[in-house]
Picture 1 (cartoon, rainbow, N blue to C red):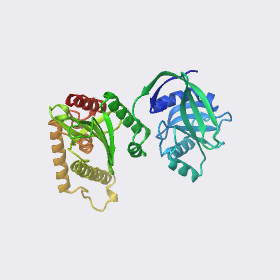
Picture 2 (picture 1 turned 135 degrees about the horizontal axis):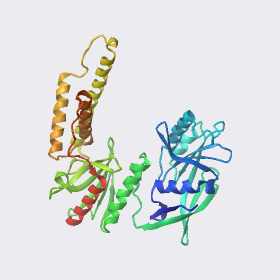
Picture 3 (picture 1 turned 180 degrees about the vertical axis):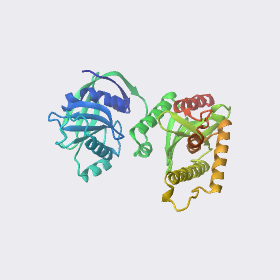
Picture 4 (picture 1 turned 30 degrees about the vertical axis):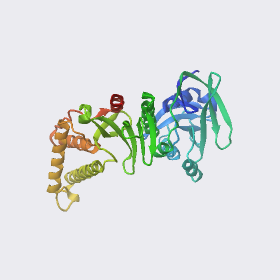
Length: 389
């Protein structure tokens, strides 16, 4: 059965457009290339999502984790899948659970930590390294067992194979993303591709802790985006967009929070650096909101079983409660005035609405929504950059 997928070329290498494209292809061709029969893809068991479940010809369970980029956590992921599957034992009519489970990782490369984790693990893991090669107008997936060095290949039927003129990823960017989950890595690389493909004059400038995108490094150069490494908040995205949430004529360097999927927030505008005041604000609100949540849980336990508590007391001090109410009110006013809000600010309002609904049956409406589309903000930054140059 032919499965048409999308490929792209970065530098001198071809790769799948996404991890989903890799999964689509192997889902359709696993039996042809490795002799295993797929039972289920994206199978969820005890809150663990397995990429592919299969069996070999003896009925032995094969658990497969796929990566379209290098990932340091493969062994840990497969271990969790192994535990969850043995607890639940799904597809018992097709799987012989008396046989040892085959734990398999398929990735373009393996980090040194993967090999160390596997070496000292009591379970057995198979690592297959994949690559895509082009011969004339045909593409092939090559799978190599990194232990036996045995290889197998199968032709890839593609619906689109496009070349990218992007420069190789900076070493610092790869280092930034070392411990990121695959979905986050893919989003970051997609953002990078979108920016560098927007205009031929946009260049990538890598320095210690920072990767900027713009048309030069002179004083009159204009930037549109920056990835900056912060030890606590990991990789932070900055975009040069208009003030007032994109509505002003003045451009500023905006710190962006994102779930690295679709949602984003403009947390504030900072001329340079990470934004220490924003970090301070985030921590203060997070600690305050955490104190309130713990206090409510404590109070709930007292109400459910008063006999367990010698004294009936409020775990939240009146001063703390006053500070909390003030923070909620100030954050709500900032929302109404369309001022920047951190992720912790929004979480504060969301939790307050939830608490109000629990206590009174009526929550608050968080209108207008502070969330923006991540793609919209990137498009806005690119559009405004073009106007400035």
